[in-house]
Structure formats: structure tokens, C-alpha cells
Image (cartoon, rainbow, N blue to C red; front, side):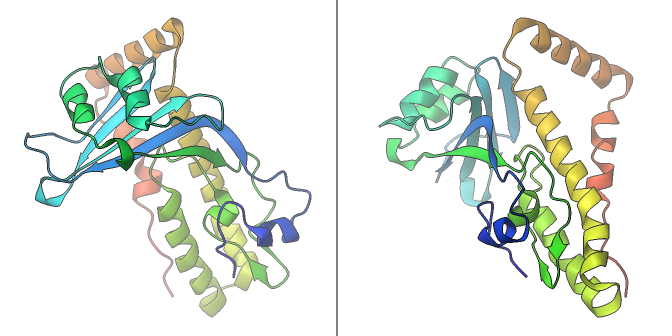
Length: 230
């Protein structure tokens, strides 16, 4: 069983003709504010220069992340300045939070994914799981979640089911769908030009009035998953 990540040498050996991971077009920043002296809710903001979010943690800590569509490999000596350039004039409290961010605390990572699904999650007596099998963009927060599901289903199929072929049958369609939905969510949130932004925002406003729970129902197939029973 190989869970050796997005650059998996096991996957490359099992499926040498597969193109492997590719750059999604998106880079991300992540950082932690250890103590925030204001009330901040969990909100994700979308705009023409990217997306940025706040996520409250225990003891008044605040996790923040941001994303933008840029060429791969770009880096700055001070990534906080890059964030201020992109998001410093966005609504409060974002400018104040960015101003209190320690310059050296920001992690930046280009986002790669498996744009081409694998033909199977096993070959012979070897199985791959997690990012080795279905690395996806993070816009539904499902990378680690799907890896955990992989492990549960793999254990069940080995103990009670059809072994590795059963694992592929159970997991390949689901993970391919979740990865595709994550990518479509990235494209929705990362719209940069006036027309797609206007269409997106208008559609979201209409949906919020007409069917306010429709967006949540879209996540039902992901969030209602249950492990197989022995």
C-alpha cells in the first residue's frame, strides 16, 4: 500500500504512461495569527485578484489562507507584501489582519493536481491512496478526507470484500467526481474578468434568494458518505 504523496514514485512505476501532476494555475498562501484581539468570523472573500479567508481557532488564534492565479514558481522575499498588494484594500478586517501578520510566517505553495484520473487505484498486489491516487485542488477541503475514506474502504475490501479490485471500483468514481467538483469550485472562486465575475455573483445572489440551501445540497454526496459495513 503506497501513500507516498502527489509525487508518488509508486504511482509512476505502476502507471508509467500517466502524465502525473500538473500545475493547476493557482498558488496559495497560509499563515497563523496566534492571538487576534478582535472578533473575526469564518469567511471566504472572492474578488478579481484572488480569494482570501479567515478561520477562527481555539484561544483566539486565527488561521488564514489566500489564493491567486499566477505563473508557477513566483516567489517574493516578503510574501506578506504580496498579500498586501493583492488584498490590502479589501474590506475590513482583512487589511488590519494582514498588517499584523509576521512577514516570515507566510507559507506559499503552488497547487498541483492530477488533472488526468488514474485508470485504477491498484495494479497487481499494489494499491495507491490519498494524493498518490487522486491529488486534487483544495477548494472543497477534501484532500485528506478522501485519503481517510480510501484507507477505510481499502481495509474493508481486503477483509470482507473483493480485495484491491473492489477498492478501485469503490473509490475511483467517487474520488474522480470530488476532484472534478473541487476544480470547478476553484474556477468559480478564481474568476478574474468582469463578465464571468458578474455572472457568478448574479447567479449566487439569485440562488441565495430562490434556493438558499442549494449550495449545501451540492455537498450532500460528499458530506453524507458512510463507511462500508462488514
